[in-house]
Length: 114
Image 1 (cartoon, rainbow, N blue to C red):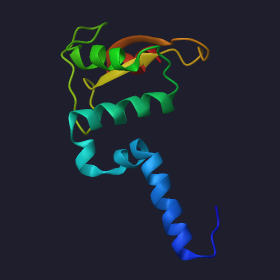
Image 2: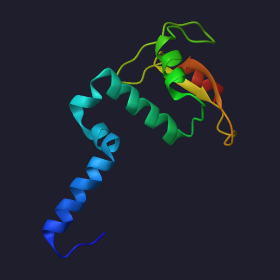
Image 3: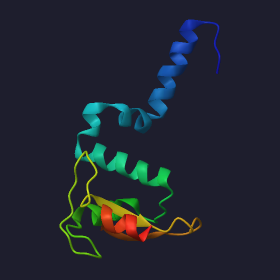
Image 4: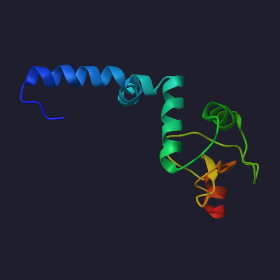
């Protein structure tokens, strides 16, 4: 929304940020390092990928507590760099109207299953 008056624009932006706090928290580096921040970012990422589930909090708990790949049983890792053993949430890309989550897999199994 364009404003000619810089003060009105500043007030509008401040109110917008207050009303959309979750969007702005995700951009905060310190918040992203907290458990709540990591969870929020992960769920937002899933939604952008097209993952559909009725209870994202439950799905996150399942995802975090899964220690081994559901297919090959390798121990899953969680690093900044993606490796063969990085934890992935497998879903069916063809299903777009209902829940499409299949398994928690290692990156290797997820790529093979494609």
